[in-house]
Length: 86
Image 1 (cartoon, rainbow, N blue to C red):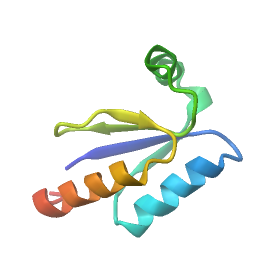
Image 2 (cartoon, rainbow, N blue to C red; image 1 turned 90 degrees about the vertical axis):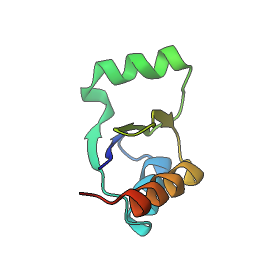
Image 3 (cartoon, rainbow, N blue to C red; image 1 turned 180 degrees about the vertical axis):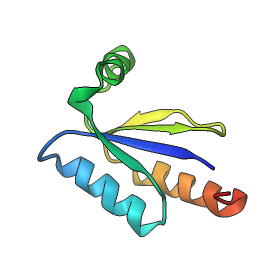
Image 4 (cartoon, rainbow, N blue to C red; image 1 turned 120 degrees about the horizontal axis):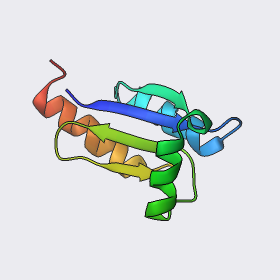
């Protein structure tokens, strides 16, 4: 099972779009406030990411991305459909 965490900012349109799209495609995720996770903010700075949300996908051959990325969300949903959520 993939563990998906969406780190969000308040009043963030891209964060809301990411969560809606994940729900639409059946991707289970947890949401955490980005401002409460300095290590995630540091990761974003190192990677040069400037947009919220920051999405971390653990387990499997996944990594992370920033901003609204429906293509990646669909890939995660497809992976979960093929490998199950066990």
